[in-house]
Length: 341
Image (cartoon, rainbow, N blue to C red):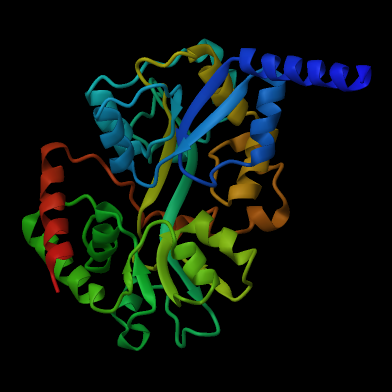
């Protein structure tokens, strides 16, 4: 009886200790960090990490603008960082608390909106391309024009993201994915509407499972997501289209009103510890732009062109930029696409 009581007292004490630990609240994308790294950070800092997830930058932004609070560190894409900064939603970073910023690869800073890292630090760099089943898609070409293939009708998906999907169409037409030319956007609209007739749906989250199960044969998606599906189905391939596409930097930012600012800085610096960054790259299959981490990666990861995009193809890619008032042009075109039969 005494041993049972002692065990109960010990468990209660442990529960009390857990409750007393500081809590770092993250707002991020799903499946975007190696779980063991979170556990390591918790052990090192004597804290708990609680994560909440969003599936689009716009959904995250709308939630914050609607009054959601309590987050200490958020992981928006760089173009959304620019919008958030313009609206005074972010805190400046203290570089004295971030010694590992010295490892950031300057090549990829040009894909961000904050090259000086005044209020954001790159987390992962991704590219959007095409995932497909190699045995089921005959005569595959690394081109956005694949979405015009009538023989694949009903078995393809495009991202439910106006900038990514319109960007793919704009690149197909030889235009910048940040164009504000209304004629070019109209042409891109018509091309996406033509593609829409072939796809099963616009899908941002479940295309991965659909590709693994062969519900979908060809999908528009992110390199890291599709690389993860290859672990489950070796028949899956991935290609960055020859026309180029989007290169996105998802960044780490501390919002105004964050309660655990010091702990948030500690997490940013932890993520860019070279050995941590290398583990994270190998787990999520996106690129943490950390120069010192590259040498620590397995040879097959360092040689993977979907993670380390070849220079000639990288030159055809662009980051999605915030277009200010001209964002409304894209929203208008996207509404027309969604309404089209």
